[in-house]
Image (tube, rainbow, N blue to C red; front, side, top):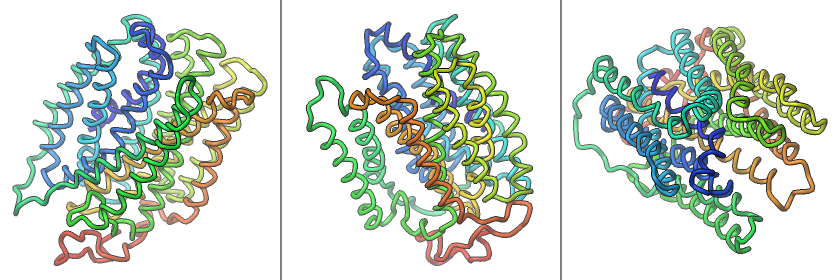
Amino acid sequence: MSMLQFLVAVDVTVVNIALPSIGAEFDTGGHALTWVVVGYTVTGGGLLMLGGRLADLLGRRRVLLLGTGLFGAASLLAGLAPTFPLLVVARLVQGAGEAVVLPAAMAVVVLTFPEGPRRSRALGVWAAVASCGLVLGFVLSGFITAHWGWRWIFLVSVPFVLVVLVAVVLLVERDRPSTGEAPPLDYPGALLLTACPLLLAYGVVEAGEPGTPGWVTPVALAGAVAAGAGFVRVEGRARHPLLPLRFFAHRTRVRANVTTMLLSGALSTSFLLFTFHLQDRWGFGPLEAGVTMVPLAVALIACSVCAPRLLGRWGARVCVLAGLGCTAAAMAAITLVSALGAGGVALVPAMLLIAAGMGFGLVGLQYVAVSGVTEDDAGIASGIQRAADQLGGATGVTVCVGIGFAPALHSFDPFVVAATLAGVGLAAGALVAGRLPSSGPAGGTPPEAPEVPEAPEVPEAPEAPEEAG
């Protein structure tokens, strides 16, 4: 499961340093290249909860095989794409494959290890692998692009996908036979949830671009708001909703997912700011930029190893607040480096702080977000947590980087603007995280019992409050 998580995480960031090479081959500017990054993350995040429902309804083993195969086929298509539009389509399919496979993979991890220190260690490994995949994507992108060409950043995943498929067949136990007719899937909800962030990204990215009509941005943003409102309306009326609104009665999980979105938005923004600073301001090549990111990867591994122990010792709330504080300090360091015009090496302290923010913050948030899950709702809880992580990252990049580097604000330092916006999001996240439970997995105290049954589809067997923890 961690190898699969690593492949998916790598593909989130591996294209960033390779974007200039992709643009040169297809004669495409930076405006269109944005969709190679955003298309993958938004599509994957928007469909993640549909993937969570698929895991709960069809069985985790079946969904793992389906999603892994789809992800591998899309990776092959991206590596062989003869045209830029086909590359974008392949990235969208990759996002769909990720959305199908990740909730099932995380549900397998959660249900394999009982709640307590064992699960905290397992989620620590899971978060460490994901975080390292995100960071090593930059390093691998620089090395592979410089020596083999950009197409191999996609093709190198194919043999590992085959290993994962074989491992799932051999190691993951078979799904339990279905006890009745499966309820229909909520396709309108999945469509609206995906359309909302896509329209938001389109509106922000197109704002102020030369040649773009003035009505495009307000229409796109209005469409995003309408899609979000439509999603809530559809979920409230659907007999078998993609996201049961009663899920939000579990306030601790809601707070954890909201904080995850805000923290991930800042973390994803920092990755692009590092890349832009190294390549655009200081003229680093792909290999130099990738090597400069190595301290971030090494520090992230160290922080992720320590995080599960600190989670049990400090408790979830302190661990999350420490992660938010470190990330905010990193944004301040990025602002200072940009204002002083310092060299690329001056970004190393900010990289170390980002590593601490990811290692401490995300592990604590993942633990709280899946507290009290059962066989019936493990997939949807995992899907919501992953969707919060990925949609938060995509939205953070769209808002912070899109506004910071907008042509209309050319008189301001884009790095300072983007880092300041990310800092505002982190401050809001700290306010929400301050109400998380203080107990950690070692304490044995349940984070919070849900106030209403968590499984509305099965009213005859509601979840007892004492079982939720």
